[in-house]
Length: 171
Image 1: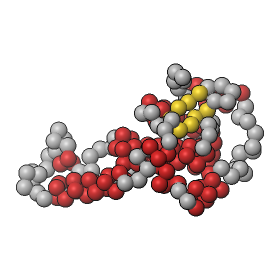
Image 2: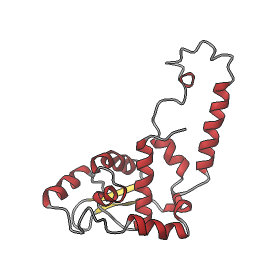
Image 3: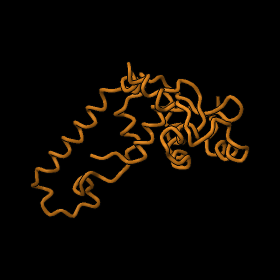
Image 4: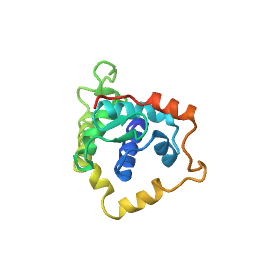
């Protein structure tokens, strides 16, 4: 089973938020993971709509977790972000052309495997993923100043572009 980049980036944004523990600008996540900000915009918008993140524009604004890390279930998140094509053709009756789908046991075995995959993820929260020494290691890696980007605020145009990419929610 392979997760889409959208799911991968969604998990990374939430991990960053949990590790940071406070509001952050989009460019910090992009820099920490070496991902284009533009790739993260759609992810942040979706996570905001789903209630995982909250965003605020302006001074003191940014992105932050809208839920406690212990309330964010990894399996539920992946189910909400995984919109890729079915694992195999016979999982989608509208596109299935396999002549043996009615008598083949592979579909059942694969469905069981997918169920086990999500079942394993259902046992974890975001808090479980960052607990203990992992949190300290992640902070050292994700929050360390990056050499490629000087520790200065983004220029006005970059800040304006970034604020246009993040939705404003009431509250």
